[in-house]
Amino acid sequence: MKSFTPLEIASVKIAIVVSRFNEYVTSKLLDGALSYLREKGLSEDNIRIIKVPGAVEIPLTAKLLAQTGQFQAIIALGAVIRGDTDHYDYVCQQVSYGCQSVMLSTNVPVIFGVLTTHTEEQAEARVGGKEGHKGREAAEAALDMIKVIKEMAP
Image (cartoon, rainbow, N blue to C red):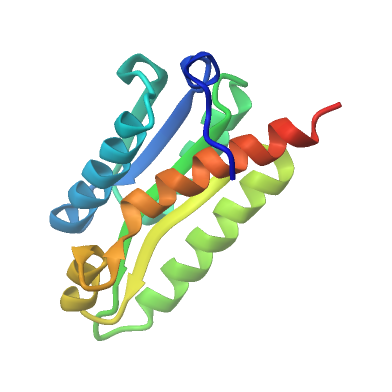
């Protein structure tokens, strides 16, 4: 996909909703997303970061941000790591469904950068390890979706 021109990137506004739970992972997701956006020329002034307690709080925050009409995309970042209970399954389902629901009801892309892993090692591998960097990938997807939507506009 063609990249943004300097004039186009100057008008892009993105919100990032990041969970504080498992912050040792989510802070790396955030760093990766911010690094990618900066590399592409997005100004710090055009990025709004909202920290929420856990992944379950991401969809409501994304919805409120989307409803402002200020952002062309929202990046959801979190880390849900399986424990010994069924809690993991419920959280993963609620967060993924909630983000999709926000996106479909507001027409604002909500990029799902929430890791859902079985172990801490798997999470670490996805924030700059052997599985790449999912924070960077989420930021790339956000810019790609902004372009797709812009190209579809009449």
